[in-house]
Image 1: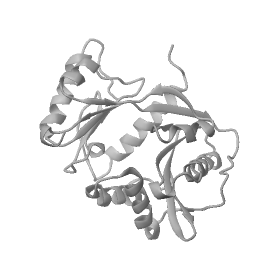
Image 2 (image 1 turned 60 degrees about the vertical axis):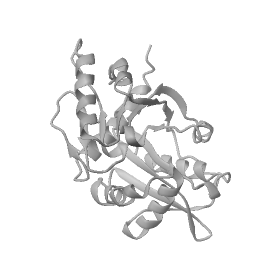
Image 3 (image 1 turned 45 degrees about the horizontal axis):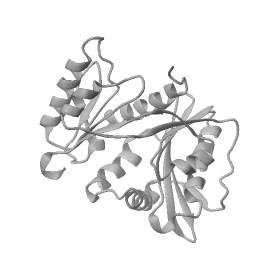
Amino acid sequence: MTDPRSVPVGANLEAFIASVADTPIVRRAGIRDALVYTSDIAFPLFNLVAGADFHPGREEERTADLADLMTAHGLPWLWWETPDHQPHVPTLETRGLHREDIPGMYVELDGRVDPRSDVRMDPVDEGGLAAYLDVFMEGFAMPELVREPMGELFLSCLDPDLFVHLLAWEDGQPVACGTVFLNAGTAGVYNIAVPERHRGRGLGYAITAALMNVGVDAGCTSSVLHASEMGRPVYEKLGFEEVCQTPQWVWMPPETS
């Protein structure tokens, strides 16, 4: 039986992706049974399929159609799977996509969370964007080509009432960052990044707790996230439990794979 807590995990992610799809950073395709967008940016997050809602019996055909469409675009792309919207997996495998397991995690919010740290947490405005991007890029080892579009996306394109970005400071230095997406009573935690030189001091815990508290203050009753292997033990200390898998299926052009 599917864990009912997986519903907000998938719904928050797909609502986040839909918000990105409606920005000028990418081009949303006019496809009714899936959320599809492409761009000229050679990075999977900017060329994406999610929310597949195929007519029963057409899963294999439609998965092949969309996989071929995205591959023909020629840039790295991904299919983000959620429990309620799944592709035909054998078709993705035959098309050369590689699965990356990503635990979908959930926790109920019944009050503010102690960050166990006195680091300063600041909302990110235009003046703090460069510092946020520095931490984000280093923490995730992102290629430089995504710096400009990520910056435009974070601060210029996404609704600031729904997307709150925080930056942690210690001794005058930015040391951690993250984003919370407020949607339908759920606080979705994203982009938690701590550069390697700052790890091991509870900063990941602190920034995650601060983002959860943004959700509490906004009236959210639950928080969800999609964990990395490194971050999972931190999230479990905050009460998050794995309730599903939200795999990424990634395709890379042969010359760069």
